[in-house]
Image 1 (cartoon, chains in turn blue, yellow):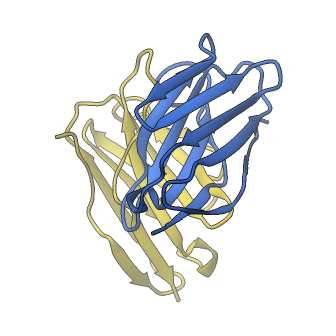
Image 2 (image 1 turned 180 degrees about the horizontal axis):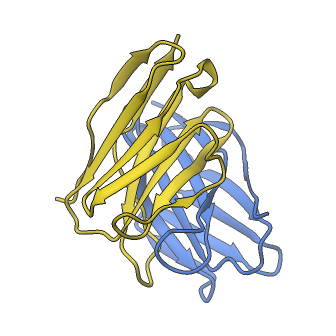
Length: 113
Length: 113
């Protein structure tokens, strides 16, 4: 079945540095790749997503890249701030509605002030 | 502001007890989901529903059942709780269509003794 691998499991950076989280997926039919941020005591929340017809998408300090050939996608956070500290999940899905969404295991990001 | 509300944030139950986890969404979404979150395993789908009274098994349905009598409400039922069901349970909803974004509740942490 579909599998999404996410690395690293833990990432610690200094405030102002960049953070990169990488994911690979197995099902070539996947066409939607969301990233969710989960703050302590809260549910995951979508922060950025990318579709298979796009190679890169940026929203202020966060960006996502997709390499369909290699089945890789990555989250880049620049100029990290303490409030970026959270657990980040990548996911891959097929079609709309969220039915076939497979999540990675998560990355716990610590941003040290 | 869109909202998915889970009725219980923390529950402690004994082995063999019947457990109900309730979820309500106010976005008129067609689809609702129950996920289980465990460290190192990410989010795993237990059950989902795409319409009232409709339900589909996810990846780990064993030991669980669900009920959707109204569009806004989706309940997860543990008929006879076991210690290996100690976990964080997340409810989510989505709309059918191009986007696959999931809207999550804040989670229900269940401990089975």
